[in-house]
Figure 1 (tube, rainbow, N blue to C red):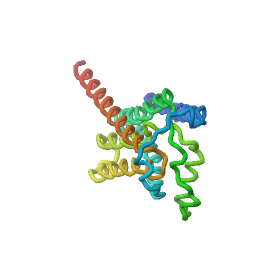
Figure 2: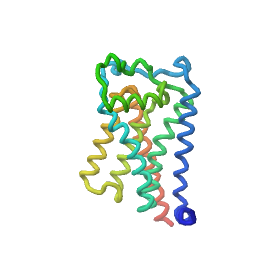
Figure 3: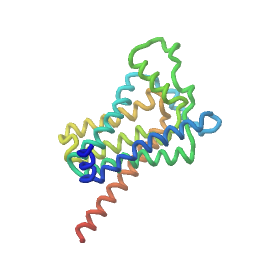
Figure 4: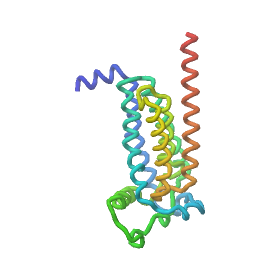
Length: 224
């Protein structure tokens, strides 16, 4: 315990990680307090019905959670600047959707999800999709998609990083993974295509804001 406290004292900026339990609690509260479709804005597009269900996309969808842990925690032991950059990018891309969902409760129609009996197949990936549905039913807090916005935030963090995935091929892989995660949200029927576009827009806005903040910080630091 003493070693942990000493670590925190030396790196007080790590306290930004306290955002995560707060976010998790708030997300569940917002999702639970609007249980009826009549109480939320249903997000839908004609394209949603044309996109087939594909359980293989549950793999990048789940990998997203592990990527977050790596991107926001690993730099803590390597670089204060990169740790703060990664966390500000990711937190910004989670906070904006949470504010929007609080002000405009939204979700997707559960009818968008597949009828597994009619689907005619069953496998471990479908079981994983069912598990995701069971903890996120009815589907709420969908626009903007946090999976999408955070995926691109992580990609931006990796692009600018000297300690995360250093090689160019690794950075390319991070971009491909961001695309796959974005596609996963619609192929496993967790989001509307509109949520994907909105999530990407949030990612771009947050990246520009964090990039500008870094430049301003450097300019002031140089001036002093």
